[in-house]
Length: 199
Length: 250
Image (tube, rainbow over all chains, first blue to last red; front, side):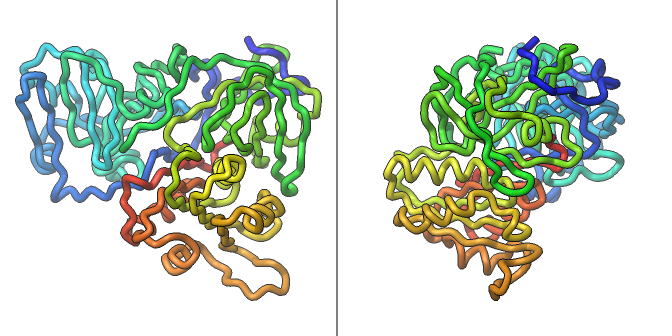
């Protein structure tokens, strides 16, 4: 524990047990992005997965939406300290998207419209832990929240859930993404408070 | 997107409040002595941690307002009515109190005084804080980089650093600023009241032909609107850096 701050009482400790360390609860849905919001039309939208051998699997919007999707109920944890509980999404599981990929790669690097990147272990994309989500709260995903589709990997800090995702490269070697190169933790587990390098 | 500064390991440090200055009725600047503080890059923030005597603790991020320098830094905190942390920092905290923080954090939303090119700063409300650090860094470094600040405020009473900005725009050649008043302007002055729009932005800031580096900071709606206006006006999305805070800070 840190030093006591003289005169600091704080607030309700009621839902603290549902929150990772250092997080606080919000009811709205803050937006955090490093640059302008890209406008991506579903007519030109494409999503692809590239294996370490260079083989690409790609979907246009109609093909992507024809895949089986599921409703997702998850808590969100942003490295800027806010957490939002019990959010509802719809998306396609990465288990489905990766089913065709012939790969033994251990690492993934997600690329986005607008140039953003983030890296994750492939193991964190499998077994019902990750989706490409296209609805939030029963509505098409808004552009500022990553629409038309974003990665959703809720067990890691939200910067790993790349907005406007367009490609996932499967790689034999790990490569830090955008925030991971700028001082933020390579893995980003909120329950271990892995916010920054060295955490 | 280009890569910027890198950070080392960040550990919690305990500083001492040296001084507190009222900037407006609801925003205070907290001057913190922190021996061993390495300095920061203009635009970076710190995490502040408060701990109650039962061990309950909370963290929030605050932008650094001062020019980079060792052993001392300044944060400007806007009090949020329903906030948990900001009312403590603006109302309870006193000179001499300890304050725990770690940083500097963020290697993207930063301006380097070695960069000579033009810079457009667009601030909404207390989003001016990290931009003020850039303006102060420019003055402190004797940089000749042309700077323009477009600062959107509700009314003159909500302007942070009014006197300091006025002074810097007088003495530091190459720094120009203009206010956008969304609710009310200075008494007796004939100024436009309304939100940022393409005409105001291009008149007050650089056009895309000047190819400025752009830093936008403010509430989400403001940042979205300003970034969209600049992209539509032909600015390269790749040189527009944004920092957004929602209404749910604290």
